[in-house]
Image (cartoon, rainbow, N blue to C red; front, side, top):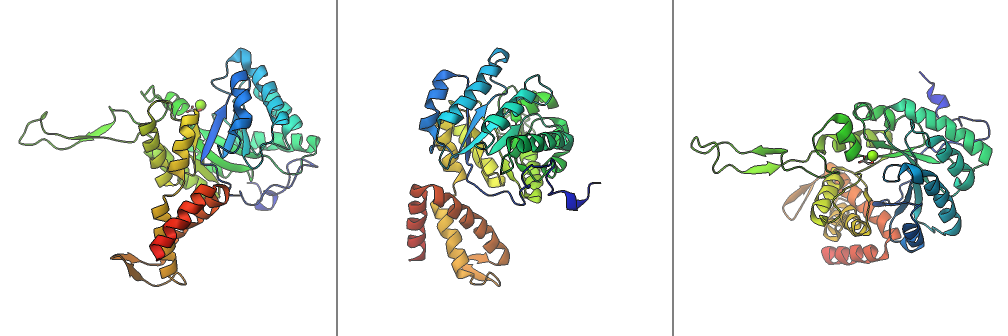
Length: 356
Ligand code: GLV
Ligand code: MG
């Protein structure tokens, strides 16, 4: 076993010091673009400020004969664009692919000082993160980078899910984990062909009424991803990193997308991927606490004074635990308000009304 003392030592001479905390930066939507697609590339400057994170995708959805164009396109876009306080991430190809080595070599040396997070797909276990960890340290040293690149794993193999805790703890670079429901479904041999979301066949049914097996029995569709998202959230929070829902493929079904995002939000995720500009607004709505909820949280915090003991508010019992629940919502609202002036005023308005 590696000594805990070594955990925060750079893995290559000259590489920057590993981070000790993953900074919380709003990342409600990770908006994917294909840097090799000229039309999409031209829109990137307009997207700055509209999404919390812009991600140049080099992996799936980029055809094999477009991989090099996508990589070169990303370098070009990053050199030509001021991302201001919008985070810049990339998704490189999988570790067993013929492209990933050049992805990492090129991106770290050419734009390593501009990238915030590198997403690694199809992670099977901590050994994948260890490989990337050392390679990044070597490349950072060579490129004389001053801050370490962070790593985000996609949970899209059965082996990855079975070892999600080890993955989350594999390196101080680990920033977060996203659910990858399409690859995960394939890898697990689940029988859904959808990208995320529910399935009408995955349901529970009420008991028969008067012996009739067919009539009068209500069915409720269940969430196929509940177990995995919940497990991922626990693994991430225990490791001090951030959990995300991944993609929702039915772009037209904005209603079911919102439901799936909200399930993830309520379970503890901080964001989701957006594959189309329409999903940016959905993620902004879902992953920003509702102003009424923020106002309530601030009211409970104010009523609870030093945070101990019990009080009744509108007939609801509040105590040391509920004040902590409220702090989660209020602190998230404060962080988001710093980036989103409209939200900041909606939160203040609702709070003033609630405390009046
Ligand atoms: C995302 O990459 C997925 O496979 O769902
Ligand atoms: Mg995938």
